[in-house]
Image (cartoon, rainbow, N blue to C red):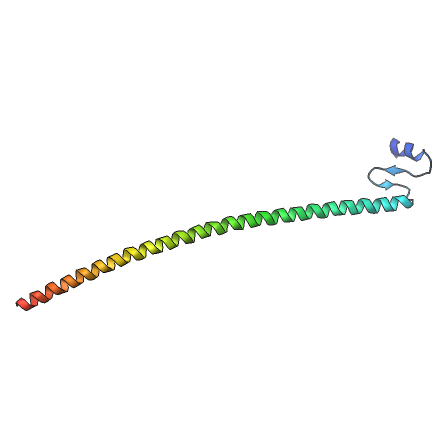
Amino acid sequence: MSQYNQSVGSMGGGKKFGASTGFIDGGMGSTQFNQTQTSVLGSQQTTANLKGKLGALQEMINALNEELNFHKKEVSILKSEKETLESVLTVKTQDVRKTLTNELFRVEEEMKRH
């Protein structure tokens, strides 16, 4: 038994108090104190667990948000590339059509001469 517990115990009343356990002799006050201490520790652990879980969820939300923004930018770039390719292909198609039309006209003219 520590000197502190001995001195408190010798003060009268016969109850001994330990800092971590409450009243050692198991009197009426010790049960209530232990229950209060347990509920406080339990609520602190629950709060810590909830804060940890909320923190983890917040980190996951932030990571997903960053990933979503990355994919949005990627889709935007792909749309822009698609529009550019459509424009280039339209110009090339018109150019090929014009070339083929001119070639057809030239061949028909050549056939008329012979």
